Image 1 (cartoon, each protein chain N blue to C red):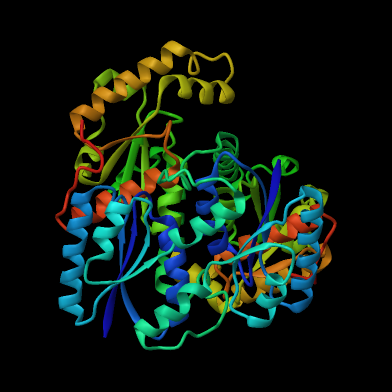
Image 2: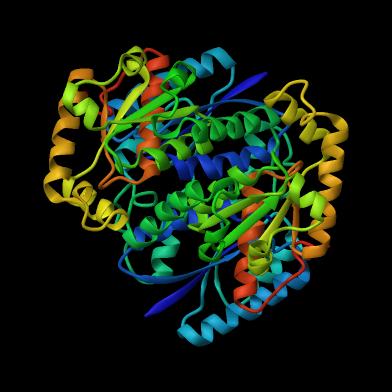
Length: 280
Length: 280
């Protein structure tokens, strides 16, 4: 039995989608058909949406769930009036917050993902460019300019994590792939040691690594079971030597890993180094 | 007058941060000191947080605002009991949703940004790798494998937008930089025409472009006012010829542009091509 869920917003819909997803994740035994409905900012679009809601209700035999962040009263009333279970995610908090802050809300929609603070937006874009230019260890001489340096074997998840750190937290992220040469020396170059305070190691289960590499270069030595096991074993020895935090990308998403890295960096800056991730 | 805001969560804190940001954007005349507090998942950490809240209250002369998504009753009670204005963003919706769905919530924390659906997670990671491998027009022969192809002059925002489309929506995104050669021909290569149905053009105000390029290559012809004006003028002519949607990165964030592109692609798939962005 599949139930339709609409994420509805007057602008990008990112907030409705994020909180909506979180809420649905509490009911993970159920099956949802998820439909994104951003830019519902006219009466016409709202009315078209109520029609789609009715279609979904007829198809599913159950009224759809609507997660919405609407600021416009007229449009909200139309959607709320449709055949749906309507949850307004935004409005319920705006009023109490307004009272606490002693200021009325601006009621402008689409402010949360717009460029409201050019300086922090520019910082994020620059961080993305930095991550692109400093991927895969191409410029270890740039590590001193980075906020964070990820190390790990090939296909352990360094690149997507770096990009997420840059995009979401505006951190200038570089990465260094640990290769054959490092395994032989049992060590990483001095340029990595020099920035050890901002180095994070990524590891991955050899079985998972093998699957990813096999997809990339089928039948190669690079993708063999023994090679994957050896690479990870060698890398672990280096991580131990460096004594940097180690995060596992097998079971954790890039969002989870990035938020842990960001938290550790912040805590370090504030002199509160907590035991969020164990050092080897 | 600066007021402290805490985004508090038992796991990544992404949901608390996203909705919290949205709510604060309604009060953009005020100045907030924003503090991220993910992984508040022990009594000890919750108690340490209440101490920080008290410090903030003493410093600001006003109790801090707390945006929280807590599933654990004991931890929530500790934080709520601190000197703060506490907004629980999650719990208020979980119960009514549970009643509507007829299923109790799992009460497991950290589900929303975890790898709960390996297939869609893998799709996102693959899309990121695709975007990395198909940046800056290096492989136009791959455009037929892309979900979306962005075109625009150098520094118009193609790369960060592609990465966001890949990371957030799992779209295989490529981009093609319009250069001198295209300007001279007044056209783009056949490989771009061939995938016109999934091509989106990015434009930017010449003044803004000039600033960005000047930072990259100070004093160069590439960064000159006349060159930026000419590049944009030529590009607009090509966009007009291609008749593809044109989005402006001067005033819109990559989140806004990506969500519009995703919406147009979805509408096209469903045969509902709306007037979200005008074709030239």
